Picture 1 (tube, helix red, strand yellow):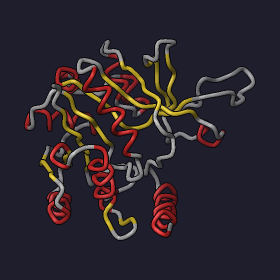
Picture 2 (spheres, rainbow, N blue to C red; picture 1 turned 45 degrees about the vertical axis):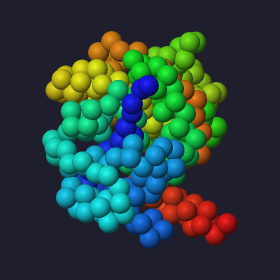
Picture 3 (cartoon, rainbow, N blue to C red; picture 1 turned 90 degrees about the horizontal axis):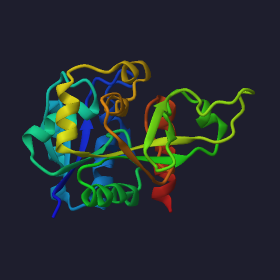
Picture 4 (tube, rainbow, N blue to C red; picture 1 turned 180 degrees about the horizontal axis):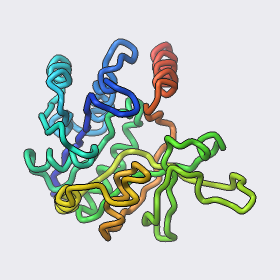
Length: 245
């Protein structure tokens, strides 16, 4: 049977939104909301926070979340999960981004199930883009797929583009991943960002540039990733609405 861990990488020094994991949403830090989404999808003993912050460690202890200290020098969240994998040995690792406090449990569970059934395959999520504002947004990575569902490329640019620069269709990345131990080890051993990964600031591209294949799976597009203060406001409003229902 495939053994797995759900890992939530969380660091305080976000370049886009400082102190992001500890920002308050409906009375709790964002990282705890994300952890709660994780334990809705998997038993709590399978769910961990990987961080470089004693403050985050203390918050996790307060709420009963398992947490593991990792280096402040990790280049990306995936590098942090790779370091975690050297400390906690499992067959596959489900990377649930710490800025996804509203990720549906069914999406996390879908990636767990597919990763455990295909433990040698890298998995990532996608959802259709239905609004042109998302298509134009530079904070949302756009996904281009092969006919067999493998990832061809991912970009913050509005792709696929047309000669008339009109929005025809597109897909967005959903930030839940499944990684085999071997893939994480190779990712971390690179020791630096690859060319397109660095330009786009999309870490999954490191795997593509190194020759790995990435199987994409369609997930719910309802989650709101927190990249900006505007995103944080939207999540806070949605949480208030959800709490009143």
